[in-house]
Image 1: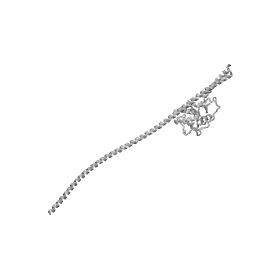
Image 2: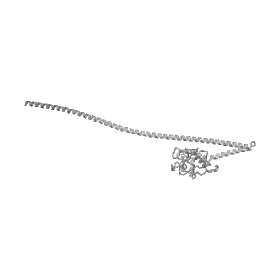
Image 3: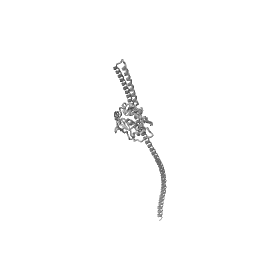
Image 4: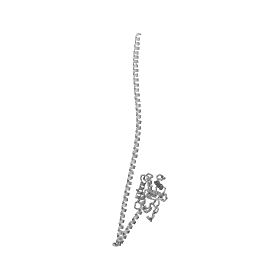
Length: 349
C-alpha cells in the first residue's frame, strides 16, 4: 500500500491528530516508513510528501503527527543521506521524546488518549522534507539534530464526515464509503422491518424478533469480516517482520563478507610487501654472493701468485744454498791447502 493511502486511512474524520485504533501504532509506523523508502528510492517521491510540502509552503503545517514525522525523517536518511539500515524499533519509537524512549505500548495508549506529543515542523524537519522533494537543491541539515516535539492540539471528537471540507484533498473517502454502506444496509433492514410489520400473518413481536435476528446476523458477519481482516493484518505484519529480519541477516552477512574481503585484501597486501622485501633481500644476497665470488677469485689468484713467489723464493734459496755449500767446500779445500803448505814449509825449514 502506498504511503498516502496508509496516511489517509489512518486519520479519523480527516483530523491530523485523531488516529484509527484498528491498526497498531508500531505496525502503522513500520508500513509507512517502508512505503516512503520504497517510493523515494532511486530519486522518486511520494504523494504524501508532496501533500506535506504544499501545506508547509502555505504555512499550514506547524506540526505533524509524531509517527508521520519520524517516517519522513528516516526517509530522508535513507533516500538522501544513503543510510542503508533503518532505525531500531525494538525498544519503541526510534526518536527520543522529552529525553526518553517511548515504548510502543505507551505510544499506543497516548495515541488513543490524544496525548501523544506532536512533532514540531522546525527548520530541520522542513529542510529534510524539502530535500526529499527537491533532490538537486539540498538545503543544509544538522545530522546531529533530532525531532522536536510539543503538545499536540486536541482533536475535535464531535467532527463528523459530513463536516469535512469538500475541497480538502485528504478527505477520508474510505470512511465515507463505509458510512454510505451502513446507511444503505440500515435502509434495507428498515424496509424489511416495514414489510414484516405490514404482513398481517405475523405479529408485531415476531417481526421485531425477526428484525433483531437479521441485525444480529449482520453484526456477526461484520465481526467475522473484521476478525478475518485483523488476522490478515497480523499475518502481513509477521511477514513484514520476517522479511525485515531476513534483510537484516543478509545485511549482516554482506557486512561480514565485506570485512572478510577487507581482511583478505590486507593480508594479500602484506604478503605482497613480504614478497617484495624477500625479492630485495634476494637481490642483495645475490650481489653479496657475486662480490664474495669475485673476492674468492681474487684471493685465489693472489694465493697462486704467492705460491709462485714462494716457489721462486725456494728455488732461489736452494740455488744460494748450493752456492754456499760450494763456497764452504772451497773454503775447506783452501784451509786444507794452507795447512798442507804450512807443513811443507815447516819441513823445508
